[in-house]
Image 1 (cartoon, rainbow, N blue to C red):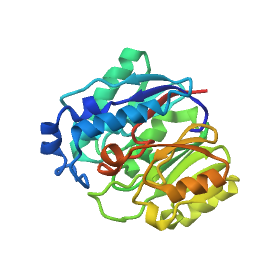
Image 2: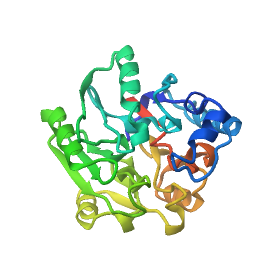
Image 3: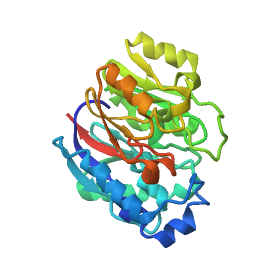
Image 4: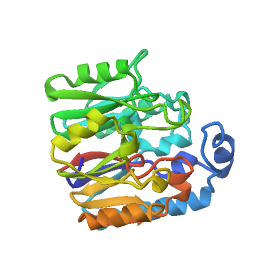
Length: 284
């Protein structure tokens, strides 16, 4: 999750939000914290895309789909990428149930193999999945991803992994809120990760430390500002929302080069930071 991104899938705000009428109809039922401004969201998304220009990244855009909502902007959640293909999720948020099929259809067009799909009572969202290394997967178990979803994911991955580690997530603000494992943990190098330690289960935090990770702890007043949602574009090269300056300073002190983007319209109101906005298809 920290090797240089070479191929990246995004879903532009222009396509996910469609127009102001769609935004006005959907933002309250989807529990956004405020009404996004469509034109500003599109402009801010362009600034977000521009952050990848200094890197050798091929950028692809998921096309619009009538079966999805504003939340399709957060393209990470509908699938989990392994080295040889994708596992389609089954969303824990009912309004997002159309996203895995839409993403899967596009991945097939790209020639990305679909290794399997979480079905039935299983729930799995990509924001709950963190690769600790090429053979070890940590998966948040909470309101968006459940035990059956984790069981199906492990079965689909089979011998591609040595361990799938369930990480119990707290109730926090309840089932209607969004709390993924990546709300609490973002690797930024092989030996460094941004964390909100107060919500990490003690055994999992100790496991991270045993792996030799240096934990960069987000201040309490920047957790809701998406301080813990940080995308590693390459080792020690990170992209984060402009709403968490204290966390940015801590990252830079730890040797991480940081870029920021205007986050209010495309991240703050939907509570999805740069990891949520991106689906890296290839890192090398």
